[in-house]
Length: 287
Image 1: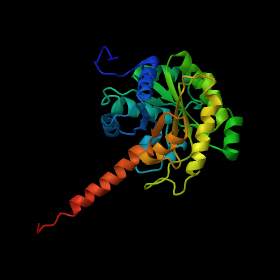
Image 2 (image 1 turned 90 degrees about the vertical axis):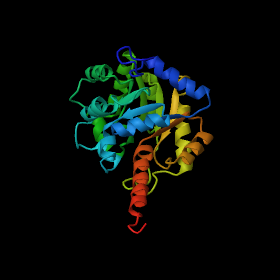
Image 3 (image 1 turned 180 degrees about the horizontal axis):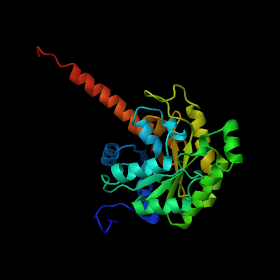
């Protein structure tokens, strides 16, 4: 539905986003959600036909030449960065694709309900739980949980988003996290199977094999599909990097699609700029 003030598509209601995704699946097409850290990335991701564009702080680090994991570190205000990218870069140039805002739900300095109101007012069509503590493990994860900054805060945020009729697409790393999010009212579940492999700042070895990624993704789907049969399921990260990888994981699971961030935005820029510069540099003065 066009925005009555601008004639453009954004923002969409929760049901309008769901309907768009349902239409994609009904046409036997995969849902593709793409992370964007700059306006030009978002502009051309839209031209490529993505179903959703997701804005979160790691996109800024990624497009500054750093690893996306920097988004989990104390290098800035994750919520402020996501809002800034959205307001000044992405929302002004995306015409039709729903734009989703990454929200750091465990930030203890914010009243998350108030921040979600600002996200909605800005013109985002939904939220994503990033930075997410679901991908943190070990002793540090235990400390986060014990000091009130754990994954439960992200679940609480989705409960609020559900009450506020905000579309939500969430990262989880374990079946039990998927169940929590489904019960809280999430619309789409992303199976996060590790940091993306490859490129200049990606990890050099997958955190799991493709067989393990397939198994973990299906376990996550099976854990919560009965809670809400209308959930959308997507895969992300680890060895799932190329279109061929995505075809493989969709062939072996009942997932509906893929979320690409480094694998779509960063990889595309790295290789295309390298190749284009080499082409220019190959030009000789003698013809």
